[in-house]
Image: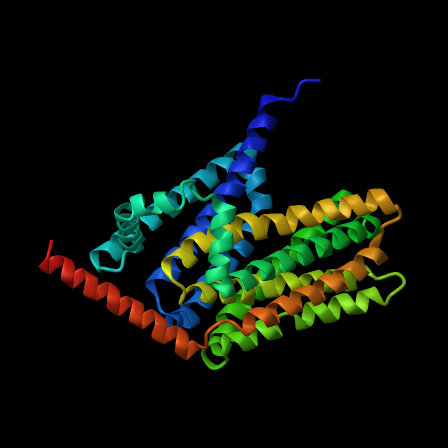
Length: 361
């Protein structure tokens, strides 16, 4: 049987959407991390993330009625409109930053000019151009914070994948009807987005201003660890308990972890903020998900009978692994005061270079 062209196009659009959304997300946060200070980030990051959560909650609530009114192709067309609005907004943001002298592209051009000036020397010392994995190794040696963040992302994505598989497996056996299962899943993720928005607007701004980032990193794994530990000691974990463990992990991810993650990058140098984020996004984020999926598939094939109970024990170990990496990372990141001084000094140097350039064009 031939696959309809429409299904092929939808599949291509889905792959493009996932890749493009990740690219937009990474670049938007890189831009924010380059133009504001840690103090400003503690104040505004949670509000920006909160607006994103509200938008996700709203989209999830209206997508069902939209499909009935405008159909699947109309829904796809509406995503083109939202992506266009995102493009125009990004262009406006870069225009404002250029007009006011804090455009991160200028720093990128300066770095490229410095590399061009030392190109011959670099070619003599390293005849072969370094690929991304080699760049990552050098970067991790120079900036241990990025190395710790890499393993934190890897461990959390592994935990998230295990909890997701465990939740979906139990959900299929507990709710047989497809429509009821879809409704439960929709409400489940909507509740996460709503709770994340509430935390980002109400609780996180207060915590971010009064508590050091290292404390937030150490607190985050507590709820998911307790949830996975409780399910691992049950002979037949209920759907509610498994959903609660997964819910707590996703809540930490959507509300606090994403913001704390971005604050780690803010005081770092240019290469760490852009190349480091690319390495972590490409390898740790993707490998944590796909790698753990392959591990689970292999265990299920090799062992057989690898069910919910075994997944619960595995999730407990993964949760403990995530907690250990967050503790490691928390010992390396700078305090709010130190990070603020680092960024202000960087901005001062950038301003001075701008003055020198005007004097000696």
